[in-house]
Image (cartoon, rainbow, N blue to C red; front, top):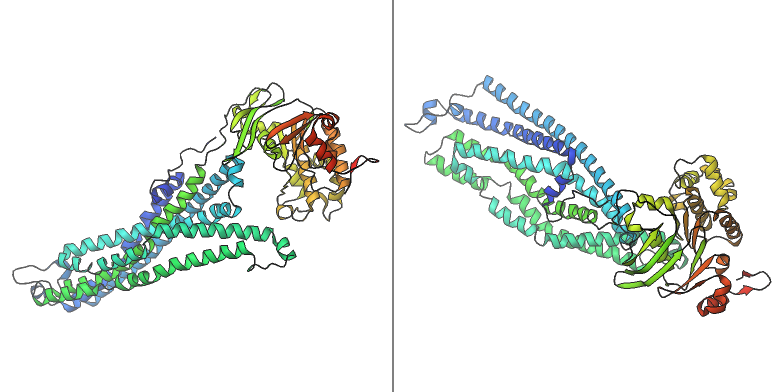
Length: 606
């Protein structure tokens, strides 16, 4: 099923972000409201100081206002100890209220944010299960890691801090400015004297931001991919005495990331410092204007004091706004990357189960291409139930592609593939998975016990059934010889086992699944000859009542197949038994002769 209700990549960054909030959106709004209330309370100490200083400097009410005017109540009267105590308590309560409200806002926003990011990661993980395998294979592992871990993690600051703090840092100064404008509009305007220059510096700081952000992200993806490749290939690197600095791909990726990041920072440092130096200097505007108005008797002394002190309180939030405003572009970039992946076309499958007429597999005029390169051409093939069919051919002939198409990892570009008379595209993915078990050459085990790795084939299987599957795959003996037997951890990606041991565990997993169709994509490639003989004997027993499709690089392992399909350049060169193909198929005969057969044992020898 395709993902629904995902925000479009053209939407604004914050709007896209809120689209993922779902039931947690209310908590984010509460966090914003609490943050605004906190910032408003944080302005009270500045107001209290301004009022008290104004009272200290003022005389009787008749002397405060110009002739013919009545002084406002807030600036009339004298400063007294009781007034000082009241204003001190107002300032103290305002600061305490600000801290408490900010704490509640931060707690509320973080709880909502972590819940939202959890759902985003789950959505990405679910998407990875439904997109074509090619969409995963063609993308470097480092890019997937950066999307699932780094990109979504960077949204934590944006959601937990930026949204409530940015809003509150806008609203609180706005209220203060409106209050100052109501008291004296000239002093209010003077408090903004430095903002135009600061805005120009900010434009310099964000110049070519999108271009630099794209370069930074691309460099990060490349470095992550190179790092994963470097770690995975460390054995080869050491074997050939290559260090990290001399390994070209890794070294170039790190240098590119360093160079692009430093170039971006160098372009921003000067302008960022200029913004932080200019914006706090509100006195550059309010002091000369205020003194001029006061000397001409147009404002009272308390108004002058209030006009000088109050802007010092709202300029700090405005500086935080300037510092955080670049998050607008960052949010859009990160959310757009998540959204773009979630909108990747999926293998569309229906919800309702299909009615199958048996388990026969059929390929009709199948064509398939990797990008612009076509690898299968008008391929037709029938695979009868309860038979063993082998796919053989030179490297690049399309064997593994056919196996993956049969397993439903991709949709064919042309033609169709059917199971039980039903097109694979017309049945749910879960139903296909019930009928087809696929074991690849590149095995993968999770970092859990061997028992649990095998049990993944059938989650409800008993320990006895798990061990029976291991015996069928010739894995029981080596598993019992491990320090903890079946409870031994397989290690990261099965790293604590040899290649042949990992293959036998994955084959045991496939046997335990007990699907009517089993596809072995060169699954015995890394097993030793003794283990391979045991697996072949097990396969002979397990093929009864099942369809077995085998891709093998050693032809001796498929001599007994009911049908051997010879592929060449994405087309079927011939189909038949081993004896038939030796008589009439020159390509198969060359492959068989190249395997160097010992006539006394009829087994391949080195």
